[in-house]
Image (cartoon, rainbow, N blue to C red; front, side, top):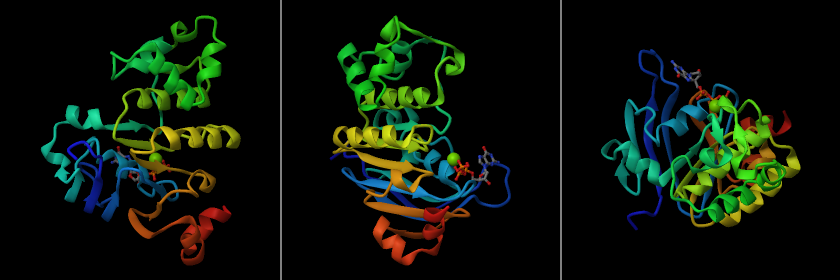
Length: 242
Ligand code: DGT
Ligand code: MG
């Protein structure tokens, strides 16, 4: 069970260094292997900040974030990185080949593993269509691929590391609805035993989540499944209707 991937936020309050007021207040939830927990809420609600505490980009000012029951403050970042893959909201590609970009973080991956990851991330066909395939060059910052392609390459990069926990920060927003649906169906199979935390803008991306946390102004105002929240949460209803 040492590598199970249970994530727990326990009464977490967080303020950015130097800032006066917290951007997250008293956040508690648990995400277990095999589960998908979704976080939804308006811009500035604190979704990205919430994710950033697990890989210790920042540490809470109160409360604890635990991974498999161990406070992450007691783990070093390299150890966390082996278990937790964060696909950031602004996914970053660096100057080099597609292969270099996919292997970043797991240099010993085989070509087969790279193509498997691309298949799941719905990136296989556009990489195949490139004259040099995996050897095709990416410009600094990924400026020569589209936003949706960049997102898919960064999702594939996360898959290559085969983590126990996936954090997707709005990773599907640049995809059309059909690609988004195909990608999530493929992901669901591949990540069936992993813990998945998804930040989303579109409700359609998260209707099947085991638990949805509705974040408003740094607080979890409601939680439940899509069906439960449709019944009980005015804030969720507003998001659905927007
Ligand atoms: P989004 O991505 O536009 O949907 O918004 P969220 O929900 O991801 O919001 P988040 O976590 O980026 O921002 C929450 C609050 O924290 C917001 O008032 C802006 C502030 N904030 C975000 N990043 C930083 C930072 O690096 N430093 C400081 N001081 N404040 C930040
Ligand atoms: Mg964000």
